Image 1: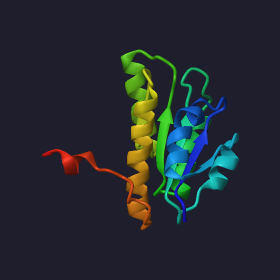
Image 2 (image 1 turned 120 degrees about the vertical axis):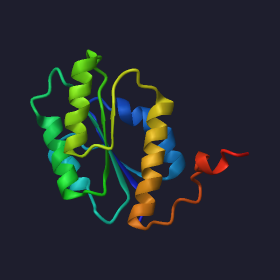
Image 3 (image 1 turned 60 degrees about the vertical axis):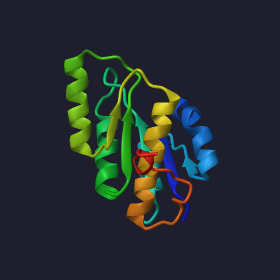
Image 4 (image 1 turned 90 degrees about the vertical axis):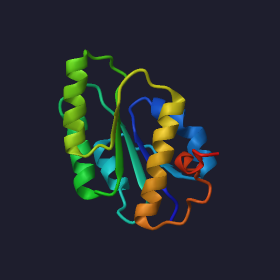
Length: 149
């Protein structure tokens, strides 16, 4: 079963940032627009990484509920919360703690760059493939294995 990348993002900015990596890696990409559709894409038997956009200024708890529900329904899914909102340090720390407690593996705030997003996605997907027992890790290079070269 091919790994899947689920991207819950209202304006598809994350999808554009990760499109080349996903195509190159031959991942199934799902772009659900609602929380219900996002949760419907989860499959416990498929290596999955979920990226979701969060906006602490406008969030009414929806993104937190999505993270908590996704973690409850598919605990092996690697969840990444991404915000493009610049926050004071104390607020960023508080939001990060909450999202980690709800099940995120990474919480990213600005500055956000394509290489950072790609590194997070590829690392989590490799881990997810191994955890679920997939076989599509032959193209993954672990830089730690090559540190002495």
